[in-house]
Amino acid sequence: MKIKFSKVDYKSIPLFKDVSVDDWNNWKWQMRNAIRDIPTLEKVLELSEEEREHLSQTLGKFKMAITPYYAALMDKEDRECPVRKLAVPILNELHIDESDLSDPLHEDVDSPVPGLTHRYPDRALLLVTHECSMYCRHCTRRRIVGETDEEMGKGNLEKAFEYIANTPEIRDVVISGGDPLILSNNRIDYILTELRKIEHVEVIRIGSRMPVVLPQRITDELCNIIKKHHPVYVNTHFNHPKEITDDAREACEKLANCGVQLGNQSVLLKGVNDCSNIMKSLMHNLLRIRVKPYYIYQCDLSEGISHFRTTISKGIEIIENLRGHTSGMAVPTFVVDAPGGGGKIPVMPDYLISQTEKRVVLRNYEGMITSYTQPSDYQGHKMKDCDFCNDESLVAKDGVAKLLNEGGTIRPQSMRREIRTNGNGKH
Ligand SMILES: *Cc1c(COP(=O)(O)O)cnc(C)c1O
Image 1 (cartoon, protein in one colour):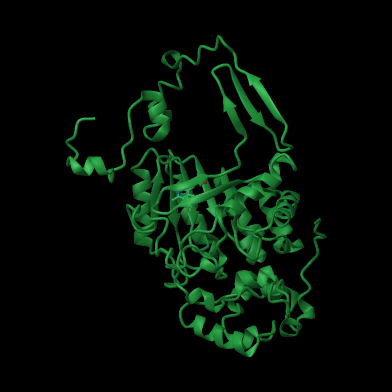
Image 2 (spheres, helix red, strand yellow):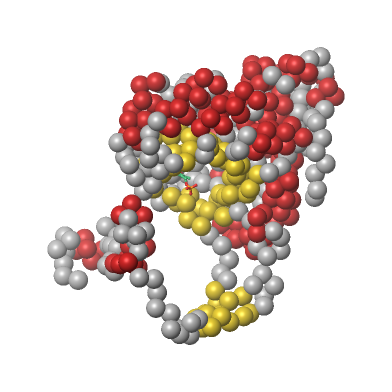
């Protein structure tokens, strides 16, 4: 569905009808007036007796915050409204499923200093605040987000900078949270400036949902700060075409016009976007506002979000319906963030049907089966004479790539025959 980008008509909502345009467009006004309680929420949507009771129980454990802007996107009556599901708590959040884990991605375990997760060899995740302008109901970091509404103390942040400075392998820093763009312009400038002082940090990424839930935050002043520190990439988080408004378009274009490459990371959510056609429309409309679809995440195993989970098969089905059927630019990578800190694992339909040394048989999106005859005299790249292969920093030091390069074995520590022989067995 092609979205007609139109300004959010907040004046039609009784609660906001007297708000001035200046206030509405002021992100601090939006933050101050975020909907946090039931009486205010009832002014923007209908709640049944039961819903009110459930909401009140849920708010005893998890906070709610909905920016007036995002509230204006919710359908007043429709309980199936995807925007409403992403913003308004329901009783299911109190249900702890037997598959739930408190820190499924081991972000705390893989953390050399508080707030910094260093999992992959050449990049690190820096959580600069636990605060958000809105609390997403499907938040993977709900164990910390909104629990301690505060910035990461200067001390911890300095320790993180020091760790990054002392770890020359880190060439890419992902700034996330909470939402980093909730911080003041000065604080954002400080963080970017400190990271830019570290010579081996080549790429800085900011993960923010502001273009979706509070596009007013993307001011000229903020863009002018960001563009001093290029290359800076911004990954945002649209989940449904309904979230792509004229205000969101304007925010993304502003960032793009100051040289920021924009990507999108969606989460596959039951009852919100677990449909190939919703996803296709989302991807098309993202490209129209200059955002490149980057990832679709399988909903992870964080506590209290089991009601949002789909099967992994649903994600594979969505990719099958995108790849080939529409622009490659519109096809993100579907990933499962592995429980236990295994990181993101891409999952997709199989396109490779069979192979011999001579031929590979492939199928395309139409089901056409084709064969590719491989060169018989292919000698391979001569690593010995290659400057890049002689650059230690580029050579994979672990994983399956290392097995391919050097041979060897990767053994699970929990292998039963290993345990039987106390690790001393001959293999
Ligand atoms: C997602 C993530 C990254 C970045 O991964 P990319 O695949 O490079 O986008 C880095 N560190 C952690 C801990 C992550 O979860």
